[in-house]
Image (cartoon, rainbow, N blue to C red):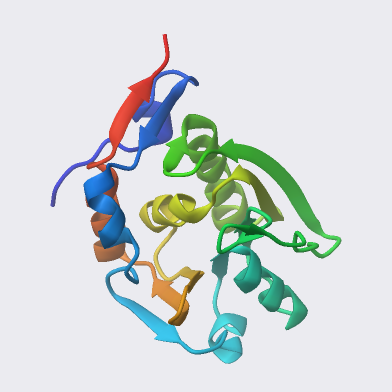
Length: 188
C-alpha cells in the first residue's frame, strides 16, 4: 500500500496553499472514475438504500426532486460551464459556501470536505449542501479519497450519464494516487 499525506491538515500547511491540476492529467480525469458504474439515469433504488454524496448541479437537483437524501451535495450553479439556477436544498440541509477556482483544490475546500465527511457521514449530525464559488469537479476526486467505505459518490459525466462510485479502499487509493500528482502552490 502506498502511503499518501493528502490530509488537508497535514499536506497543506497554510490557508494560502492550493493543489493545482497538471495539464497532462486533465484527459485522464475526463473519464469515469476507476471501478465506477455509468447509468443512463439516476438509479433511484440504489441510492435510496445507501448513503450517497452528489457532485454537480443536475445530479443534485434530480436527486432532490426524486426525494433522495444525499448526505452531502456539492454544486456550483453551473452546468457545462454555463450558469444554471442553483439547486434549492431541502429545509433541513445546512448550506456551506466555499471558493474553489477551476482546475484547483483549495485548502479551504479540502478542509470543509474533511469536516463534513466526519460530521455528516461518520457522526450523522446533519445533511450538507456545499455551494462552490468556482468549480466543483475536482472536489469529487477529493471526496473519492475521503469518503467512508460503501458510500456512493454520484456525479454526472457529460455525454455518458450518471457515474456511481462505490467507495472502498481501492477507490480511495486510486484517488490519492491521482491527487499526489497535483502541483502544490502556496502564495507567500
